[in-house]
Image (cartoon, rainbow, N blue to C red; front, side, top):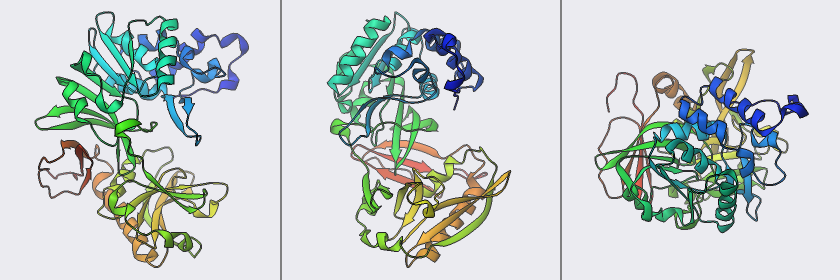
Length: 416
């Protein structure tokens, strides 16, 4: 992710134009911006005008999220996404001059970027369920010079049929399902870009029509604020050690487990098993997380407070894959062997810790052998009730109210 040290920018260098151009230069250098149209949009749109009061110009143009609203529990309910991710989504949507675009989840800034790319002959509609966000977006768009962007208060689940069909629908909130309205309002050759949550793992999917279903042509690890309204489907959070250790659960099978015994299991001795599968520093292995989620086993994501539960030592302190039983848990770990090598492993607690931990390590070995160097799984989204073709390959099915996502893993040399 592109970023720059804010404390290295002098007072004479932090005009909005200079800081904005510095950000764009970094996005270009990192390969995040790959077209002159998207570059021009990022250079023109004044991002700082869409940030809340109190956010500095430097912070507004950092390659990071800007929170615009929080709920009563302190969690973000609206934000301006990181510029690298916005650039990726603009490219994925295949925007073109004169295009008709629906943005689901407003804020104003991203809609202005879209408006720059589709130009005066295009139409941009941005919807949000929150009247405060809609009002702020409208005000900022007018100040920034984008009065033609149509901002509407509406539930994401219904889209906005009045201006359909859309050449692209860009969803900027985390969804767990694809409502029929989105595909109904998408042009036959349109593109749907959506952060879809699959068993707790969110990937920004670029979806196109493929017969009776949608096929992902790209999938990027991401994080977004969750959808509100009729399509809201929050994950279940279980406290295992108060707020120090929590478990996020995203499927009915795991929700039905009685996990009360896990809290006491974590107070007992842990079991560590190492896989001999290694990785160099600063190397992406996000497909391993989705691979572990794709197994036919109760599953959750562990979040651990680094300061108050350092003994847990998960691979990821915020969102670590874990396999579960009613009284046992095994999760992904990693250790540094030397300056250039890290090794994956698993740690387990509870009566089934030994076999469960070994199972995680065995899965790591299969991922390393069959999937680590592959492009990633095949991801398709089928309407509920449609028969999904059988496969001999490992496959995760994520059934929701409207759709079922199918994540299929194909090893080198295999055919689906």
